[in-house]
Image (cartoon, rainbow, N blue to C red; front, side, top):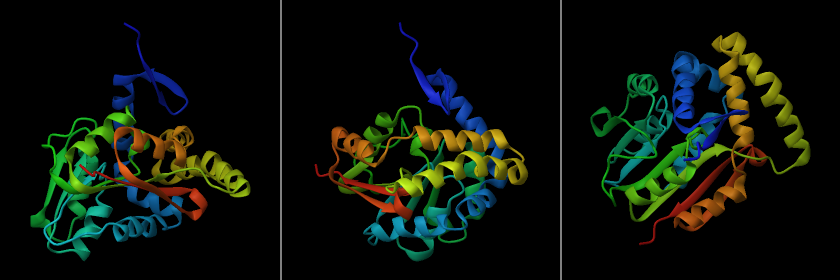
Length: 246
């Protein structure tokens, strides 16, 4: 049987190796994760996360799953603004999940934390009204598996929302951004997080991730309807949306 390979940054590794290596990266940077996000984005990641929450038509009693929840910024934001919903914080990395649980200060009794893989969610079909995945999709081993699981666990009419790094639309912005993510971000990792290797992987994972149109095609192929993409900061990050009709 052919040994399938996946990208881990610029390396080609086995599927099982990639999952383990990615989780090791996030375990190593957990304690500096929030600080690095603030430095790398100059604080703008809070605006991006606020934008994705604003796009979701959250209603009373909704059930919301946040996959790759990390340290829980989006769950905290939802809980702060919507008191009558239930949120599910899902992450494969236990250390990140623990960090997120420590940060939750709103609606603690309506939030659950689940340590599981986005490619194999332990939930029944038609469970959630909204599915969110933020700065996680580029780190998974099989993107299509994650998208299939998202469609499966959403209720009919439910929405999929993905916030992720993408490709700038302007050639000039893209050139500046390439220099920033390949040269500056690893230096920040070295001096702030004391882990240059982890943030070199970050740069490479962004570069290898499908662009806006390619990801849209993947969503349509999986079975999402009414798909669209919103570019933020010229496409440095983007929000992909899709809906489960049946």
